[in-house]
Length: 319
Length: 262
Ligand SMILES: Nc1ncnc2c1ncn2[C@@H]1O[C@H](COP(=O)(O)OP(=O)(O)O)[C@@H](O)[C@H]1O
Ligand SMILES: [Mg+2]
Image 1: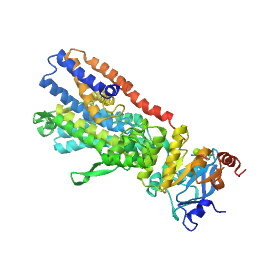
Image 2: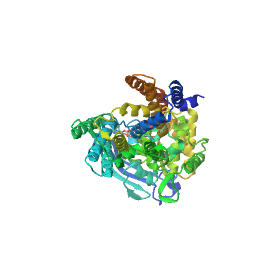
Image 3: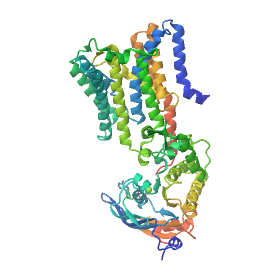
């Protein structure tokens, strides 16, 4: 029973919240509103999965939101200038990847802790985004070839949700079923052990941070396509949400470890919670307060699982 | 006089591992001052000595974790350089770094195959390979069974195992590489009596399989019970080299302190 609760407790709590809102406000469980929640979840979860991949190598990527904003602005500028859609998309993804690789190199080659390196990258990305836009957003009638990436639907399911399913499934298989994925996880679990076993841990850290940047770029492209505009701070609101999704996700399924399914369930729960609070008439700032409590609460919950590992380490023998 | 095991193994056969005039300096500190050691196939060689004698430095050199300042290493008569632990592993020299080498929250199978996971092709595509978790679990179980360790579930995280079982998982990884020479640095330090006995038994099983073991230990009772030969280091030099036959723990302790037999 305790095992069941520690594995599924927070996921069930999320389900309870969804049921609560469905009962409390009639506007919540309508197809239209659920579709809005799912679309919001897609942006959030793709961004959060990047953060999770970096965290799997035991590195923090605090630059995801600013990198996503920069990538959105670059994509928006190119679409706005009438460049082909594929070039704009590639530039957005490329910008994200480049920032991620820069983070990776700063951490592995320059030995700057990721906490600091990614804060620096965030500041640079923010500055570049304002430089490119000169402070105003790119807004316009953009080609449907671009906006359709995020707006249409296929078989009755929003395109955004398809993107999320594709990205999440790919990452799930990568992390759980490939050699590179298990090397990534081993790097975060026990760096010294992984290194002694011949795993290229520095390369894995660059991979985790690089993928985090790439996914921030992907989120940016979808965000820009969805609202057909690009502003230099457009992903800012997603930052705390993404971190909360990963940390809350770490309380589920494999407690104490960042994981794909947990991140997805947590992202949906957080978006449903935010949406439900607004429908109930709560002020906008209530979301931030709740988010802060969830972030601290999640870590407090999974700290038990993390402490267990450290505890055992302390008890065991060392030279 | 030649060591007994040398006579037993046959003198013309090249030693499995041969160290000549090994030196290691850390800045002004001379940790090893020209050490010659031969390790013969099938023996359990204990390396003893006080703190600071140079045991760990020597082991790091043999395991590929650091290169010597001077001297030569030969494996099966062939001069080699060991550039990394991975390099050593590929040549059949595995070092068990105790818990440093295990990922506590990963499973037994994941730890045994850490860095050398088995994969299988998917959908007959040559480039798409996924982890073969079932085979890794089966083979990991096989290695542990060879070491007479019975754990039901290969997906158990290593953190839930006893100290002796964890040592077996680390040895299991050496078996996975089919290592001929297995180096263990203080494998029983901080283990209880029962777990120590279990680890000594693991060492005997390795020897019975024809593998060669280098054992670093402070515990003289362990050394006389499991080693076939002992080398004593003092201040970076080899001072004694003896078969353990007929030695008792007290005599050995005296030899470690004084460098000679009482
Ligand atoms: N990385 C290092 N840097 C500087 N000095 C070292 C280092 N490693 C060992 N030493 C020194 O080398 C000598 C031998 O140490 P070590 O090989 O650890 O001996 P033992 O394992 O027998 O205790 C000691 O004087 C120790 O202080
Ligand atoms: Mg030592």
